[in-house]
Image (cartoon, rainbow, N blue to C red; front, side):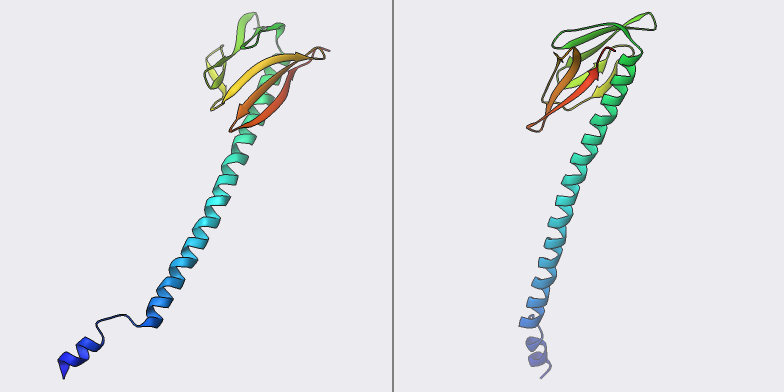
Length: 136
């Protein structure tokens, strides 16, 4: 008699299986939604970081003199010291102190348009441009 009772309860019932499947599918749905939010947050954080770097470079160049540029290097005098913004591999580096301004770039270069110096960069297959210096 006891053996029969144990045999009867040794397996899950159909309702328990459906409930477990429902819980797992709800967890997967919540996980998928949170991953999309995380992906969006990472991109927004990188864009904010790029805007801060542009602001710092503009501020630096506003105080600089004798600004000249090539495709990969922007030279200037900052408080009587020679300085440069260099594009090295996937970074833009400020040569006075080797401060990294931007990183994880796919491509970047300096160019002139309407007498102003611009920076163009590519990150994750998207192109961005920002003005760095425009003489008064």
